[in-house]
Image (tube, rainbow, N blue to C red; front, side, top):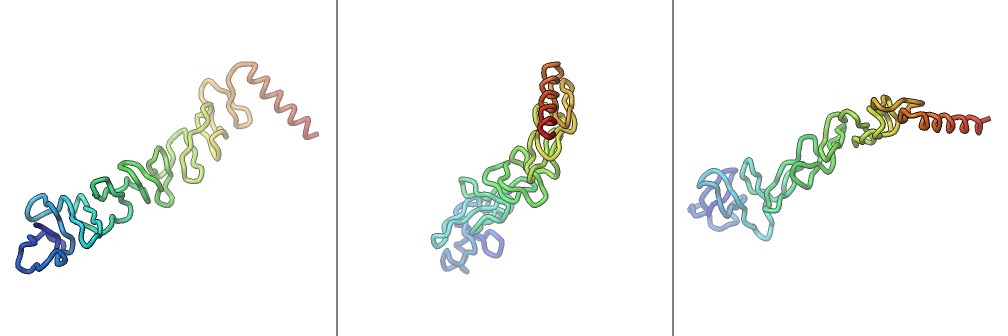
Length: 172
């Protein structure tokens, strides 16, 4: 049987080993006889996890990794502080924004940063700021009035103006 000792795969049958405890991290199977563990054995009832790039058996996965079903430590995507599944983030590193379960340096076009979560602008907005409905530009088939976008038909225009007049009269 193989195990890791001093960061190297060694044969446990070597005379310097008296028991499994002599291994830093035991492998139950290895990729080849010298380079890498492919599975780890339980050592004194401690569950061990394997790092896929270094093929080391570890007592726990490092930060910014999650445990896959076969006890393999999988790294989180770029800019993730934590993750639970391959290719998705649970929490972003400080200063990064969440969009579609991934972390980005800035929010993509047609979204707004609300508490470091990218939120789609209203369906009428081309771009927005502060909130998803505070339009900074409207889509082509809409017109802008007081930072809101309206359909380009007369009934929508009249309704918006009527509402504005009523609000103005209430202020008087």
